[in-house]
Length: 93
Image: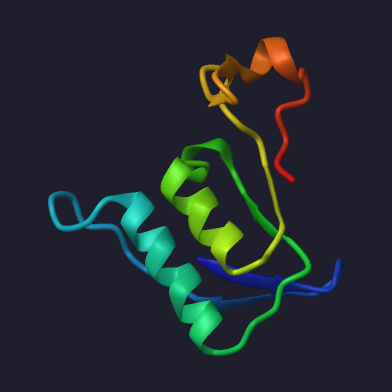
């Protein structure tokens, strides 16, 4: 789901429904990000949970020059080191 907020009001702008065996949740998230980019959205931050913090999604957001905030799983690596050992807060850039 793509959700816009000003901190008080929340508005759903787009949604993709996951169907087992058709697409992965990561692919659906990437499609929603691409859709938002094509429409000209320029978010201050993209916020999502650790499930969607895949390398593909993070690279896509980086290519769009957007910033993100996400909880990263403790088994994720950055610069070859596990994040729980390198940076205890595990949030994005």
